[in-house]
Image: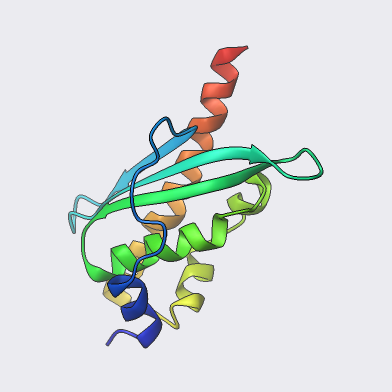
Length: 130
C-alpha cells in the first residue's frame, strides 16, 4: 500500500521539530481525518541577496502519510527562494514518495498548503513591520 520511500520518510522523518522564533509559521489541518501540520520557516539570503528558506521544520499530528509528506515538503523547500518554494505542488510530493493511496492524497495537499501558509505568514509579518 505504501511505497518504500514513504515508509522511509515516515520512519526517518527529515526536518522534524520546531523552530523557535520562526520567521513564518503555517498551520493547516483536515477536520475529516484529524491530521494537523505546523510548518516553521527561517528566512535568510542567498549569494544573489534573494530571500531563501534557510531552515524549515515541521510538527505533524496524523497518519504515516501525513508525516511523510511533511518530511518531503521540507526537503523540497529548504534552500529555495520563496518564489521557488511557492511553486512546489502536492504532485511533486506524491512523485517523490512514488505515489500515495487515493485516500491519503489529501496529506500531500496539506503539506503544500502548510508551506504556502508559512510563506504567507512570513510576508504578512514583513508587511506589518513597515
